[in-house]
Amino acid sequence: MRKKFWKVDENMKIAVTGKGGVGKTTFAATLARLYAEEGKNVLAADVDPDANLGLALGFSEEELDEIVPITKMRKLVEERTGANANNQFYKLNPKVDDIPDTYSKTFNGVKLLVLGTVDTAGSGCVCPEHVILKRIISHLVLRSDDVVILDMEAGLEHLARGTTAGMDQFVVVIEPGARSIQTYKNVKRLAADLGIRQVRVVANKVRGEEDEAFIRDRIPEEDLLGFVHYNPEVIDADRQGLSPYDVSASATDEIRKIKEKIDKGRSEEHTSELQSRRHLVCRLLLEK
Image 1 (tube, rainbow, N blue to C red):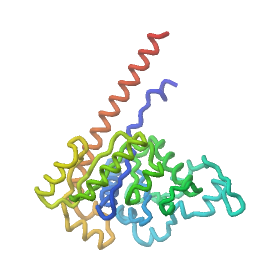
Image 2: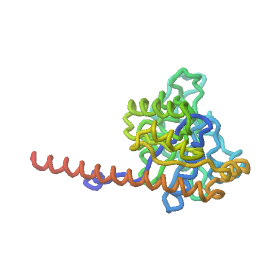
Image 3: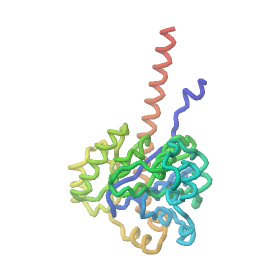
Image 4: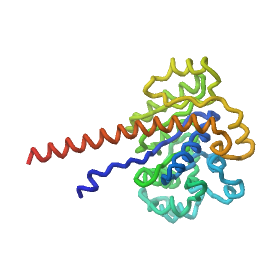
C-alpha cells in the first residue's frame, strides 16, 4: 500500500491545442519524437478530425490510409457501449484499457493512436462515440509508464465537452497575432474549469525580434515556454510528407529547449507533490 501511495507519475500527459494552421501538429510530433529519442514509452494520440499527426511522426501515407479512427469504428463502439439502432441506452464506463495497445501503430519509437473526434455540430451532446473518446483519454492519463501527447482538434470544442480533463498541462501553440492570443486566453479560462493548473504557450512561426516582443508583451513570462522561428525546412517537410524531426535540425533544437523547460517544470511539480504527501503522512502519524 505504501508503495502505491508514494508513487508519483513522472511521465508527462500533455494536450497540445491551438487554432487551425498554427503548427500544433508539428510541435506535438516533434515533442513525441524527442521523448522517444530518450528511450521513453511514448503514445501520441491524434484527436483532430483532420488527422495528420502520423505524417508528422514519419509514418507513410500508405500506412496511415489503413488506419480507421476509433470514433469511426462503429462496431467497436457498439460492442463496448451496448448502443445500437435498437438500443438508445448505453454504458457510460465501457471497457477501453485494451484499445491503446490493440489499435495503435508504432514507428520511430512512438505509438500512434488515431482517435478522431465526435461531430456534434456544436450541440455538446453526449453520444456513445463521445463516451468512448472521453474514457480512452481518461485511461491514457492513468498510463504511468507512458509519456502521452494529445494532438487536439483546432478550437475549443474539446474543452467545452470536458474530454481532456485530467491532463497535466495544456500547451497552446500560437503565432504572433491577436486571434492566437485570444485562443490562449480562452483555453486558459476553460482549462481552469477542468482543474488543469498549467496552460503554457509555444509561439510558432516567429520571424524576428518584433514578433518576439509582441508575444512577450501579451503572454505572462511564467506561461511562455519559448519560440519556434519561421523555418522553410518545416514547410518543405510538410510538402514531402516527412517528419520535421528528420528534416530540420534547427526547428528540432528549438523544440528540444522547450521540452527541457517542460521537463524542469514537471520535476519541480513532482518534488512538490512528494513533499505534500510527506507532510500528509507526518500529520496522520501525529494524529494517531
